[in-house]
Image 1 (tube, each protein chain N blue to C red):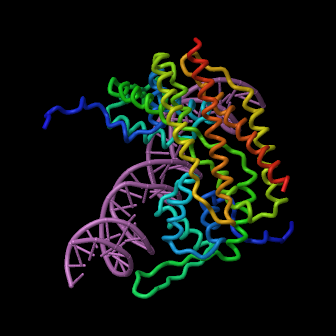
Image 2: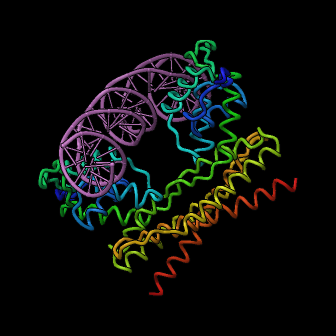
Image 3: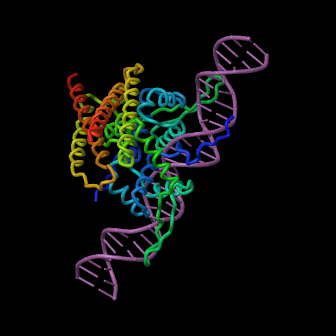
Length: 185
Length: 185
DNA sequence: TGTTGACTAGTCATTATTGACTAATCATGG
DNA sequence: CCATGATTAGTCAATAATGACTAGTCAACA
């Protein structure tokens, strides 16, 4: 029977890690569309895949919810830019989403698992050859991770990259064992 | 200057592992919608997430490409069912997609990596608490994997499940190390 | 000064995905 | 025999995601 309403804010449940990412880059500093997109496509494309129109759509939705504000700026005779800034409601949302994201444990679906399920539809030789190819490619991608671009002091991109490296190494180990197991039959 | 055309078939590039999955279950035997959906939602929901309308839409697209055939069947007075069957074009596509899937090495994006990037926006204590919570939940989900339902002799669901178990274990190890590293500062 | 290629900034039509819904049948217990 | 809940089978309106596109600026060189 309490008449108290929750302290408003924004409903956390309708946002995911993409919103967290956008709010996060705006925590660092105000950004216009091109900067945000450049960051997503060039700096962290290995961590998350999000296309430009998706980012704009999300930013628009965040604006509707007053988590970010937009201001159109004209610099010289350049085309006008939308400069996005995080609001205090947005900072709240950011912190809540960050906590939730840190605590969550769900691993993503591995597309490669589907093929494993149907391994018996190939001859043992073909199956082993396929997995060996997967292993080679994985080794190559692991090596390419070594040239990590440097990063500023605020974002822990290094942690995300290390994590991916660890998971890739684990995948490689599993593949190695599995190939050996299949070969021993 | 050759006039030879490729042996037709179906353009492999426009299909992904969800098509492979659907073709795969139809390789086992003809299925009607409910069976397919039951398999996806109850047997392998841990491996891939695909909703019913998505499956129907994909099956429709596969039919348009002559990879599957559909026949409406009426059993007694039950509502009519669409019975899906794989065609020989579809079997071709299945084998190509299976080889490609086995060889591919791309790991998915980990949603949890986004939070890691912004770890510095929490106090060290909060960050460590969040990661410990993540670890607890992961341990719980690892234990729940132990009751794997049994499976038939054709599909290697066991391989996919073992793979997930291995990756979860690796994630746990990484989390453990990372928490220790953060605590030691 | 005209051309080329890279940078900047965003939009839009199309396709993909799914939550919510309809509707019939069947099994069970009272 | 009637109500209830589970099963069966699918559809549809609404939302989400993206490939392809437009369009202006800037720098450098011939």
